[in-house]
Image (cartoon, rainbow, N blue to C red; front, side, top):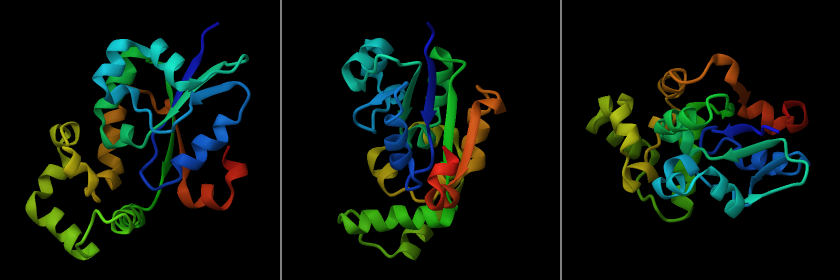
Amino acid sequence: MAINKFYIIGAQKAGTTALWRYLSLHPEISMPTDKESPFFLSKGLISAGWDTHVSNSFQTKPNTTIEGSASPYYMCYPIAAKRIARQFPDAKFIIILRDPIERAYSHYSMLRRIGNENRSFEQAVSEQLGDKPSRLLQTSFVDNLTESDDMQNYLVYGNYRFIFEYYNRFFKKESFLFIDFNDFNENPDTNL
């Protein structure tokens, strides 16, 4: 029996962890035991193969008909779309989107809390816009982010149009289920 594949690729700080937890409880859905398991961004995992990844990382269930995975990094690094399409062209996606400014500020606040950001939000955003505004829209930049670029890149991950134009190159619009963060947060039962 063929096992269907889906990926939660919602924006960072938009509820992907909660959705991963909810869907992990379903008796027919197998997912990684750790949410952040971005198979399609790891050359080592890709070379070992999907089946090895599933056997090493997933909570497999006897009645599995669907395998799912959740990582906001699939939205942060659109190269994942090409890699998923290459291996699973019929994959489906669940995308939770949050107001880009609220998302950016939540991301910033998290880094402030853990001590990885000392600037004001206004200063951090101004520096991103002032230094290289065109870089925020270039696929080559998104595909080649460094860890330091990634950690404090508050703006690029809210550029949903750019990100989904890239995903739409590889998947039909019927492959995507979009969920609004506020709706999901207020009524999670009606969104599942």
